[in-house]
Structure formats: structure tokens, C-alpha cells
Length: 276
Image (cartoon, rainbow, N blue to C red; front, top):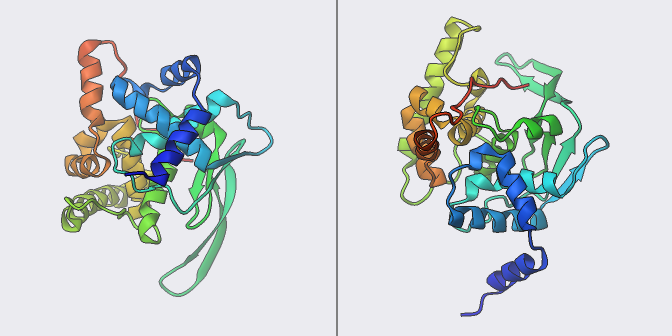
């Protein structure tokens, strides 16, 4: 049966082929893609083309955005969607704005007494509800290792979360997932992390303490760890890892361990990076 969507997809892929050498360089620059099968890397390559066709990358002065940089960003953006069914997961926004450095973002909070507090917070990324994704280029350049840090995955996890409305740590779950199981796993881990920091604000936490900001940040941070430090996440919060594996339809831990078995010198996940 003829499908306009499938025809359009084939047309875009035919019109914007990816140079094989450029793709090889991108793969070589992103260790978190190591161990993907040929079929998976081929699918990722196609999804990068479609992503770059659908989203506008706006580079502010000071950001050099060549073909390699665009494709490298797209590969990180599309990795979480690699095994998900077609659903237009990144719908609702059309632009990624790239800053040359961290930026100040106006913040507002009303406390329990009704007093409104306003301040400027330094950010390396933001995802606006019904708006663009903003990324600081140094954070993108530093992403892609097995070290618990990936700015693109973090901010785009917020966009997945926002598919249900305001970000609250609950993206649209698949039909074979139960909200009760998701909530139980993530809430228990969130409460544990929060309790550690309440007891000692300077505690050495098993994952980035920024995850304790709120449930939305917990989902975004654990999504980062799932793809870039799965061994640290599963050691700290195995039930959270299991829920994310079911949601993302991937098992990065198995891929990382396979790589380490094949090459004992292969890099293990490093200490967690901290958020700006």
C-alpha cells in the first residue's frame, strides 16, 4: 500500500546522502556508539539525516557548525530513539539553539509561603515546553564518552518527558509498561538520592546529585547515565535501569560489557560529571 510518509522519507534520504568517510569520523568520535551492529549504525545514519532535515540548528556567533559537527550532534540526539517505534518522538519543537558557552537563564520560584523568588542561573542547556532546545556548545563537544555526561541526551529526554505536558519525569510509556512500575522504581531511587543529600549536601552520591532537583531532572540525568554510564546506573539503581531499558528498547550495559570482554583495556565509565 502506498504511503506518503514512507515516500517522503525515501526522498529525503536519497536527496541528502551522508558521506561514508564523514560518517566513519562521527562514529569514531563517539565511544557511546561503539558496539552497535551494522544494521543499527545504518539505521542511526538514516535517522540523523531525517533529524537534520526536520530540525533547524541555529548556531550563535562563536559556534562553528560544519557537516561533521551537525552529524555528530544528530547521532547523539537520535541514539535514544534508535529502537523505538515510529512515533515522531521529537515533535512539538523545530529548533536547537547552540550557544558558544554556558548562559544565564532567568528563574522564578514561588515558595510555600507564596513569596516569589527570582534569580539568574547558569545553564549549559534548557528544553522549553513548546519551544526550542538550547545547548551550550562546549557541553556538546564534551559529550559522547562513557562518563555519565551527555548534554544532548539530557535535554532531549526533557522533550520526551514533555510529550505528556509539563516535564514531570513520566514520558509516554509503551503499551507493555505499567505506570505503577515506572513510578515505584524512579520514586524510590529519587527518594534515596534526596535523602542522601538531605543528610549531607556534600555527600558522594552514586549518580550526579543534580538528579535530585526534581523528578524531571531525575529522568533526564538517569537517561544520560543509561546511555553513557550504564554500569554506574545499574549498580546504583537497578530497577531504574530496567525501566529505562524497557522504555528505550536498548541495553547499553550489555553492549559496554561486551566491548570490555573483547578488549580488557576498553574504557570503563568514568566518575560522574557534574552539571553546570
